[in-house]
Length: 74
Image (cartoon, rainbow, N blue to C red):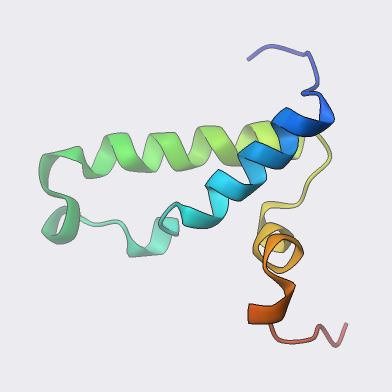
């Protein structure tokens, strides 16, 4: 993995794209057929890049779509 950080626009674009990706728990052989392992690899790669850029993947959806997310209580 490259150690370079993404610029702000690229990072924002990656966050938006990540919100449209399936969650890893939703990916299985029944739904995705023979491409399920590759799909899981792609999800993992995007999560790694987000984390490398200081972004918690679990918080991305709430940041990008705050109107669709419940208020955090922690």
